[in-house]
Length: 173
Image 1 (tube, rainbow, N blue to C red):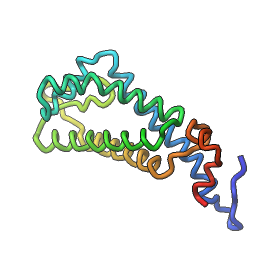
Image 2: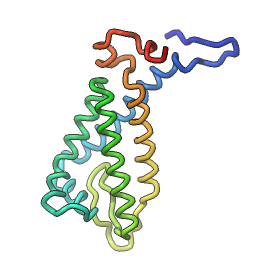
Image 3: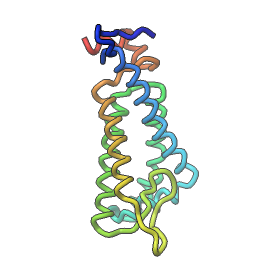
């Protein structure tokens, strides 16, 4: 790997950005694969976690809860191979905005729930304190990763880059 270096010794953004994009894409893929994988084994628990937010009717919450792990796994796989990266990043961003809004809503309404982000969630036991702020900040960090991929979706070592046939450095010039 050759990096373009200015006379001052600083690495240029066009040389670093594609490889940073690989790290961002694989990091967000890992998030979705872990989140979906943790839920796919118990779809009923995932439905209960969505229902705990008290924003959907019970039947709708169970359907959303059952579908969500498969959506997360699909996003993770698309990002892992770098296929339809901008679309996967856009859907990721939309989901993350919904997740943040849901957590903020639960917090503002005084609900004591586990977000269910990485496994079973739902009502917390009496005396347990929810950790909403760290969950919101974490999801905002993931949203920043998705935003990066919305702007710069093509990365090395990806199907998108291979199908485009052009160097990802061409995007910055």
